Length: 162
Length: 181
Image (cartoon, rainbow over all chains, first blue to last red; front, top):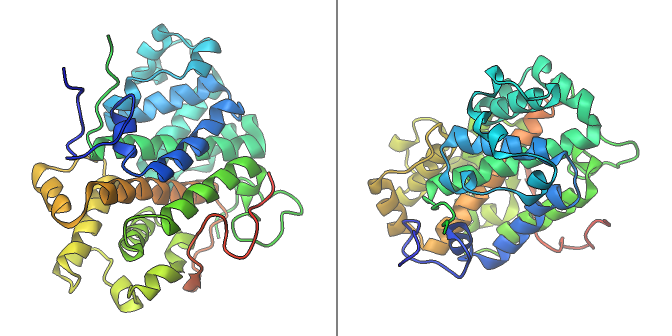
């Protein structure tokens, strides 16, 4: 059976559609992966907070590929599918910490109107994460937002499950 | 100027990027500069097309810093201020070429609340660009948008800046070693 594919008429090698699409620009993909991987490898921000924001951004965009992925570092840190199932209505669901709620509020504003970010939205995130943590957090949000939009634009298909 | 939410680290120098709040994360900064330099100077898509997309993004996100910068490589490819002036709302009726307008429409779709091109827009892009060029343009938009949103969300943005022509990002950086990790 052929793997589901983007509408692009060409693809490179890869384990999933995102890899096959991005492999058309292999050196750029390598540099992207190196940057995007640092947030998890170096644990620059709590991986559960990062994963919740990554998945919430993918939900806002309806981006099937990032929604089909789970980051091992977040799972190892205790994020389970039950909590992910509550993410689409996090503001009225139990089980989210104050920092997770502040981070999700910040992430949603970042996606929809970053310039409109208020001090009230930013303050609890900066207070909890500090300067270095806040910089890492917004950098990670940028790559999540960009990757989700990239996937929607090129119709990158979700990871195949067996 | 808006109040900065994160101030640059002490002693971070005067470089506009390394000396900014991004200097709090030197390893991600170095990785970003490598990614950005690869996009701009080791790509398959012409620099003027990427610059069109970057400047359209800068206007929509309203990043003062991004709006003020012009990269030298695109300028050398003919992206003059007369062209830049047409990257405004209403560009459809401007004198820009059909290919340039296609880049701007692609950028607008990418930045919209529903970033999904229809079949006609896909076909138009494939008529102007190879699949590898399209991947590069779309990944570039992810970075342009991301950098702009990082800048505006961290605060400290001046209200206006004069236009400034900057060297095209490259990796390793032209004329010097990359920053130490």
